[in-house]
Length: 147
Image 1 (cartoon, rainbow, N blue to C red):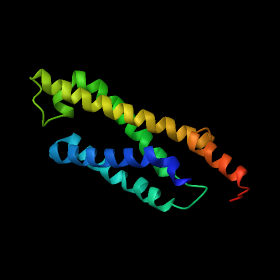
Image 2 (cartoon, rainbow, N blue to C red; image 1 turned 135 degrees about the horizontal axis):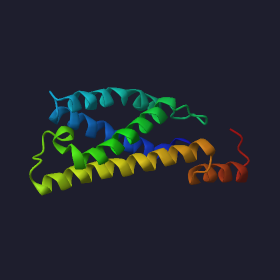
Image 3 (cartoon, rainbow, N blue to C red; image 1 turned 90 degrees about the horizontal axis):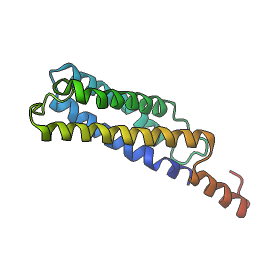
Image 4 (tube, rainbow, N blue to C red; image 1 turned 180 degrees about the horizontal axis):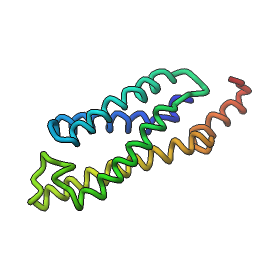
């Protein structure tokens, strides 16, 4: 039950890992492609942390917090730069077509939304205010379990 507190974090981590991988693959050769490759490598530590915390009641997720704060900052910058430097961020999309700009902005907005939700969820987990933790406490109190 403790592991389920991190469902949003785990699935969003997988989404960002593969999104950054394909962003690096499609942008390889440009500075943005190398930057995306660094994000892929940085995601390996949180992935390892997610595997390591299975079965623990007091999880440690220091790298995961750092990674999602970094991802939030990057997606925030991407959201702003999608209006000013579109071809720098998305060199694989045609910057002249309005549909390409809309797709690029949509990708940036979705990434920003997901990173914001995860940063918020990590804050709730840190403070013990998430609903899953309240369910765990209720269950442990009701059945007199002391883990």
